[in-house]
Image (cartoon, rainbow, N blue to C red):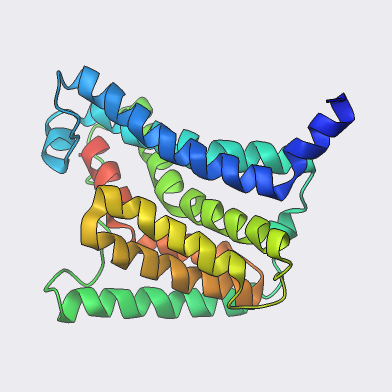
Length: 237
């Protein structure tokens, strides 16, 4: 292959989408292996382990950044993608924020009324004697498990839509295929709870498709993702 052919192949959305999903899947097994090594044979880094050893939060946070954000960002830089195509735009921002706020309100209402949880999933840390390193790691965790996760999904929706030429449709192939694979992969680690996560992403994906901005969905997922706030709370007791 010539250098031009190789570059064209790498820029092909079919290659980029496939490589991103494979990287995400294979990376999960690598993270499990690393966690098993650190935890002396027990790969489970559950909430109790994180509360006892907050430094372990480095593993899920860095894993999320590398497995979710690395390839989409690198490919976007290589392609010189317009931020607006990936939802980073102020166009229709008000509509995006309003729809996202409705999603957050409905989610918190559901948590409060049906599953007997507090009205919000946000666990705001006490911020007593905060170490700068922990503060930076907590911020990275909030960004990784909030906006970055949504960017990952939006990026895949956009690229998959390009493959099937369905960019103009709201219920597009990009949306349906991305959420379907997202659900399948999360089932391995989250079980039936993957249905909840995938449903949230489906709604946020629809907001992106309707408004063409991902800012509202990014903020919404930050608020509803309790795990992001748990990590922050563990790091900033």
